[in-house]
Figure 1 (cartoon, rainbow, N blue to C red):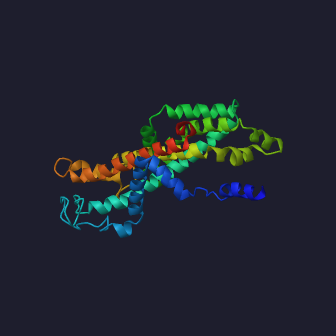
Figure 2 (cartoon, one colour):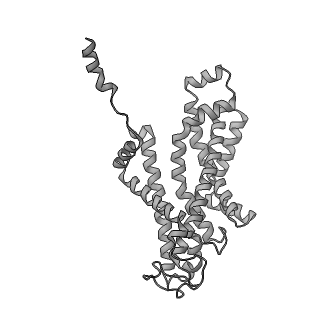
Length: 298
Protein backbone atom coordinates (compact mmCIF):
# COMPACT_ATOMS: atom_id res chain seq x y z
CA UNK A 1 0.00 0.00 0.00
CA UNK A 2 2.80 2.36 0.92
CA UNK A 3 4.56 1.68 -2.35
CA UNK A 4 1.32 2.16 -4.29
CA UNK A 5 0.65 5.44 -2.49
CA UNK A 6 4.15 6.68 -3.29
CA UNK A 7 3.67 5.81 -6.94
CA UNK A 8 0.32 7.60 -7.00
CA UNK A 9 1.50 10.76 -5.27
CA UNK A 10 4.91 10.97 -6.93
CA UNK A 11 3.89 12.69 -10.18
CA UNK A 12 1.70 15.17 -8.30
CA UNK A 13 4.52 16.11 -5.96
CA UNK A 14 7.00 16.64 -8.78
CA UNK A 15 4.66 18.61 -11.06
CA UNK A 16 6.53 21.73 -12.19
CA UNK A 17 5.15 25.17 -11.46
CA UNK A 18 4.80 27.74 -14.23
CA UNK A 19 7.65 30.23 -14.25
CA UNK A 20 7.20 33.84 -15.30
CA UNK A 21 8.67 33.27 -18.80
CA UNK A 22 6.10 30.51 -19.36
CA UNK A 23 3.27 32.76 -18.19
CA UNK A 24 4.60 35.60 -20.33
CA UNK A 25 4.66 33.43 -23.46
CA UNK A 26 1.15 32.16 -22.72
CA UNK A 27 -0.14 35.72 -22.32
CA UNK A 28 1.58 36.80 -25.55
CA UNK A 29 0.01 33.85 -27.38
CA UNK A 30 -3.46 34.80 -26.13
CA UNK A 31 -2.96 38.54 -26.80
CA UNK A 32 -0.72 38.77 -29.90
CA UNK A 33 -1.73 42.35 -30.71
CA UNK A 34 -0.87 43.43 -27.17
CA UNK A 35 2.48 41.63 -27.47
CA UNK A 36 3.27 43.48 -30.71
CA UNK A 37 2.37 46.79 -29.04
CA UNK A 38 4.64 45.96 -26.08
CA UNK A 39 7.55 45.15 -28.42
CA UNK A 40 6.99 48.40 -30.36
CA UNK A 41 6.95 50.49 -27.18
CA UNK A 42 10.01 48.69 -25.82
CA UNK A 43 11.85 49.42 -29.06
CA UNK A 44 10.95 53.13 -28.93
CA UNK A 45 11.96 53.33 -25.26
CA UNK A 46 15.32 51.60 -25.79
CA UNK A 47 16.17 53.72 -28.84
CA UNK A 48 15.29 56.90 -26.92
CA UNK A 49 17.23 55.92 -23.80
CA UNK A 50 20.28 55.07 -25.91
CA UNK A 51 19.98 58.31 -27.90
CA UNK A 52 23.70 59.17 -27.54
CA UNK A 53 24.41 55.92 -29.40
CA UNK A 54 21.39 55.52 -31.68
CA UNK A 55 21.05 59.14 -32.88
CA UNK A 56 23.33 59.76 -35.87
CA UNK A 57 23.71 63.51 -35.19
CA UNK A 58 23.56 66.04 -32.39
CA UNK A 59 19.90 67.18 -32.25
CA UNK A 60 20.92 70.79 -31.58
CA UNK A 61 23.69 71.02 -34.18
CA UNK A 62 22.87 73.34 -37.07
CA UNK A 63 23.55 72.73 -40.76
CA UNK A 64 24.42 69.04 -40.52
CA UNK A 65 22.87 68.87 -43.99
CA UNK A 66 21.00 71.05 -46.48
CA UNK A 67 18.09 73.00 -45.04
CA UNK A 68 14.60 71.55 -45.60
CA UNK A 69 16.10 68.50 -47.26
CA UNK A 70 13.90 65.53 -48.18
CA UNK A 71 14.59 62.08 -46.67
CA UNK A 72 17.79 60.54 -48.01
CA UNK A 73 20.40 57.91 -47.13
CA UNK A 74 22.30 60.50 -45.05
CA UNK A 75 19.18 61.85 -43.32
CA UNK A 76 16.48 59.17 -43.19
CA UNK A 77 13.72 61.55 -42.05
CA UNK A 78 15.13 64.63 -43.80
CA UNK A 79 16.25 67.91 -42.23
CA UNK A 80 14.42 70.96 -40.90
CA UNK A 81 14.65 74.64 -41.75
CA UNK A 82 17.91 74.98 -39.79
CA UNK A 83 19.55 71.93 -41.32
CA UNK A 84 19.10 69.76 -38.22
CA UNK A 85 18.64 66.01 -38.66
CA UNK A 86 15.00 65.11 -37.97
CA UNK A 87 15.68 61.48 -37.05
CA UNK A 88 18.12 62.56 -34.35
CA UNK A 89 15.66 65.12 -33.01
CA UNK A 90 12.87 62.54 -32.90
CA UNK A 91 15.08 60.07 -31.01
CA UNK A 92 16.21 62.69 -28.48
CA UNK A 93 12.69 64.08 -28.29
CA UNK A 94 11.50 60.64 -27.25
CA UNK A 95 13.55 60.96 -24.06
CA UNK A 96 11.67 64.10 -23.06
CA UNK A 97 8.20 63.05 -24.22
CA UNK A 98 8.32 59.56 -22.70
CA UNK A 99 9.96 60.75 -19.46
CA UNK A 100 7.37 63.49 -18.97
CA UNK A 101 4.54 61.04 -19.66
CA UNK A 102 5.82 58.26 -17.39
CA UNK A 103 6.58 60.55 -14.45
CA UNK A 104 3.28 62.41 -14.85
CA UNK A 105 1.21 59.22 -14.94
CA UNK A 106 2.90 57.64 -11.92
CA UNK A 107 2.59 60.83 -9.87
CA UNK A 108 -0.99 61.58 -10.92
CA UNK A 109 -2.30 58.04 -10.61
CA UNK A 110 -0.32 57.47 -7.41
CA UNK A 111 -1.95 60.47 -5.75
CA UNK A 112 -5.31 59.45 -7.20
CA UNK A 113 -4.92 55.91 -5.85
CA UNK A 114 -4.08 57.16 -2.35
CA UNK A 115 -7.04 59.56 -2.35
CA UNK A 116 -9.31 56.82 -3.68
CA UNK A 117 -8.28 54.45 -0.87
CA UNK A 118 -8.78 57.20 1.72
CA UNK A 119 -12.20 58.00 0.28
CA UNK A 120 -13.24 54.34 0.47
CA UNK A 121 -11.79 53.86 3.95
CA UNK A 122 -13.64 56.89 5.33
CA UNK A 123 -16.81 56.23 3.31
CA UNK A 124 -19.67 58.53 4.27
CA UNK A 125 -17.51 60.95 6.28
CA UNK A 126 -16.57 64.53 5.42
CA UNK A 127 -13.23 63.28 4.06
CA UNK A 128 -15.02 61.04 1.57
CA UNK A 129 -17.47 63.78 0.57
CA UNK A 130 -14.69 66.36 0.10
CA UNK A 131 -12.61 64.02 -2.08
CA UNK A 132 -15.60 63.05 -4.19
CA UNK A 133 -16.68 66.68 -4.62
CA UNK A 134 -13.21 67.72 -5.81
CA UNK A 135 -13.10 64.70 -8.12
CA UNK A 136 -16.44 65.64 -9.68
CA UNK A 137 -15.27 69.22 -10.23
CA UNK A 138 -12.01 68.15 -11.90
CA UNK A 139 -13.72 65.52 -14.06
CA UNK A 140 -16.07 68.20 -15.39
CA UNK A 141 -13.13 70.17 -16.84
CA UNK A 142 -11.35 69.18 -20.08
CA UNK A 143 -7.93 67.66 -19.42
CA UNK A 144 -6.05 69.81 -21.93
CA UNK A 145 -7.69 73.03 -20.74
CA UNK A 146 -6.67 72.30 -17.14
CA UNK A 147 -3.11 71.50 -18.18
CA UNK A 148 -2.90 74.68 -20.27
CA UNK A 149 -4.16 76.77 -17.36
CA UNK A 150 -1.60 75.31 -14.94
CA UNK A 151 1.33 75.79 -17.34
CA UNK A 152 0.15 79.29 -18.28
CA UNK A 153 0.22 80.29 -14.61
CA UNK A 154 3.46 78.53 -13.62
CA UNK A 155 5.40 78.97 -16.86
CA UNK A 156 6.67 76.58 -19.52
CA UNK A 157 9.25 74.13 -18.17
CA UNK A 158 9.65 70.39 -17.90
CA UNK A 159 8.77 70.35 -14.18
CA UNK A 160 5.66 72.47 -14.69
CA UNK A 161 4.49 70.32 -17.60
CA UNK A 162 4.86 67.20 -15.44
CA UNK A 163 2.94 68.89 -12.63
CA UNK A 164 0.17 70.04 -14.96
CA UNK A 165 -0.35 66.63 -16.57
CA UNK A 166 -0.15 64.87 -13.19
CA UNK A 167 -2.84 67.17 -11.81
CA UNK A 168 -5.22 66.33 -14.66
CA UNK A 169 -4.76 62.56 -14.19
CA UNK A 170 -5.69 62.46 -10.50
CA UNK A 171 -9.54 62.34 -10.71
CA UNK A 172 -9.89 59.21 -12.86
CA UNK A 173 -7.49 57.37 -10.57
CA UNK A 174 -9.59 58.31 -7.55
CA UNK A 175 -12.75 56.82 -9.05
CA UNK A 176 -11.24 53.52 -10.19
CA UNK A 177 -9.24 52.78 -7.05
CA UNK A 178 -12.07 53.84 -4.72
CA UNK A 179 -14.36 51.29 -6.33
CA UNK A 180 -11.75 48.55 -5.94
CA UNK A 181 -10.93 49.58 -2.36
CA UNK A 182 -14.60 49.39 -1.35
CA UNK A 183 -14.67 45.81 -2.63
CA UNK A 184 -11.46 44.91 -0.78
CA UNK A 185 -12.67 46.35 2.51
CA UNK A 186 -15.59 43.90 2.58
CA UNK A 187 -13.18 41.00 3.13
CA UNK A 188 -12.92 39.45 6.57
CA UNK A 189 -9.16 39.88 6.88
CA UNK A 190 -9.70 43.65 7.06
CA UNK A 191 -11.95 43.17 10.10
CA UNK A 192 -9.39 40.76 11.55
CA UNK A 193 -6.54 43.24 11.12
CA UNK A 194 -8.63 45.98 12.71
CA UNK A 195 -9.50 43.64 15.61
CA UNK A 196 -5.82 43.06 16.47
CA UNK A 197 -5.21 46.80 16.67
CA UNK A 198 -4.06 47.82 13.17
CA UNK A 199 -4.38 51.58 12.68
CA UNK A 200 -6.04 53.33 9.76
CA UNK A 201 -2.86 54.01 7.79
CA UNK A 202 -1.54 50.50 8.40
CA UNK A 203 -4.78 49.05 7.07
CA UNK A 204 -4.77 51.32 4.03
CA UNK A 205 -1.10 50.89 3.09
CA UNK A 206 -0.48 47.24 4.01
CA UNK A 207 -3.85 45.57 3.49
CA UNK A 208 -5.98 47.61 1.08
CA UNK A 209 -3.41 49.15 -1.28
CA UNK A 210 -1.64 45.88 -2.31
CA UNK A 211 -5.01 44.41 -3.31
CA UNK A 212 -5.64 47.36 -5.63
CA UNK A 213 -2.48 46.66 -7.63
CA UNK A 214 -4.15 45.06 -10.68
CA UNK A 215 -6.53 47.96 -11.46
CA UNK A 216 -3.69 50.39 -10.72
CA UNK A 217 -1.54 48.77 -13.43
CA UNK A 218 -4.49 48.89 -15.82
CA UNK A 219 -5.12 52.62 -15.32
CA UNK A 220 -1.38 53.32 -15.54
CA UNK A 221 -1.07 51.64 -18.94
CA UNK A 222 -4.31 53.20 -20.15
CA UNK A 223 -3.22 56.71 -19.16
CA UNK A 224 0.22 56.73 -20.78
CA UNK A 225 -1.25 57.41 -24.21
CA UNK A 226 -3.30 60.27 -22.78
CA UNK A 227 -0.18 61.73 -21.17
CA UNK A 228 1.80 61.49 -24.43
CA UNK A 229 -1.02 63.29 -26.25
CA UNK A 230 -1.25 65.98 -23.54
CA UNK A 231 2.51 66.60 -23.57
CA UNK A 232 2.58 66.78 -27.36
CA UNK A 233 -0.40 69.15 -27.38
CA UNK A 234 1.20 71.47 -24.83
CA UNK A 235 4.45 71.50 -26.81
CA UNK A 236 2.53 72.18 -30.03
CA UNK A 237 0.85 75.18 -28.37
CA UNK A 238 4.17 76.51 -27.09
CA UNK A 239 3.46 75.57 -23.46
CA UNK A 240 5.68 72.50 -23.26
CA UNK A 241 9.40 72.06 -22.74
CA UNK A 242 10.92 75.23 -24.26
CA UNK A 243 13.25 75.17 -27.30
CA UNK A 244 15.87 74.31 -28.34
CA UNK A 245 15.23 70.96 -26.64
CA UNK A 246 13.37 68.75 -29.14
CA UNK A 247 9.93 67.34 -28.35
CA UNK A 248 7.57 65.56 -30.70
CA UNK A 249 4.83 68.16 -30.31
CA UNK A 250 7.32 71.00 -30.63
CA UNK A 251 8.57 69.59 -33.93
CA UNK A 252 5.01 69.59 -35.24
CA UNK A 253 4.52 73.18 -34.12
CA UNK A 254 7.79 74.52 -35.52
CA UNK A 255 8.89 73.60 -38.99
CA UNK A 256 6.21 70.94 -39.31
CA UNK A 257 3.42 73.52 -39.35
CA UNK A 258 5.34 76.18 -41.28
CA UNK A 259 6.38 73.85 -44.09
CA UNK A 260 3.26 71.65 -44.05
CA UNK A 261 2.60 72.03 -47.79
CA UNK A 262 6.15 72.28 -49.14
CA UNK A 263 8.02 69.82 -46.87
CA UNK A 264 5.44 67.38 -45.58
CA UNK A 265 8.08 65.06 -44.05
CA UNK A 266 8.79 67.64 -41.33
CA UNK A 267 5.31 67.07 -39.89
CA UNK A 268 4.79 63.50 -41.05
CA UNK A 269 7.71 61.94 -39.14
CA UNK A 270 6.95 63.25 -35.61
CA UNK A 271 3.21 62.89 -36.20
CA UNK A 272 3.65 59.25 -37.19
CA UNK A 273 5.73 58.52 -34.09
CA UNK A 274 3.15 60.16 -31.81
CA UNK A 275 0.36 58.16 -33.46
CA UNK A 276 2.10 54.80 -33.13
CA UNK A 277 3.20 55.39 -29.53
CA UNK A 278 -0.29 56.45 -28.41
CA UNK A 279 -1.85 53.53 -30.31
CA UNK A 280 0.68 51.16 -28.74
CA UNK A 281 -0.10 52.32 -25.20
CA UNK A 282 -3.85 52.05 -25.80
CA UNK A 283 -3.59 48.53 -27.25
CA UNK A 284 -1.27 47.44 -24.43
CA UNK A 285 -3.66 48.89 -21.87
CA UNK A 286 -6.57 46.94 -23.36
CA UNK A 287 -4.52 43.72 -23.34
CA UNK A 288 -3.50 44.21 -19.70
CA UNK A 289 -7.10 44.95 -18.74
CA UNK A 290 -8.32 41.77 -20.42
CA UNK A 291 -5.55 39.77 -18.72
CA UNK A 292 -5.74 41.19 -15.20
CA UNK A 293 -9.48 41.76 -14.84
CA UNK A 294 -10.99 38.47 -13.58
CA UNK A 295 -14.41 39.37 -14.98
CA UNK A 296 -12.98 39.59 -18.50
CA UNK A 297 -10.94 36.38 -18.16
CA UNK A 298 -14.05 34.29 -17.68
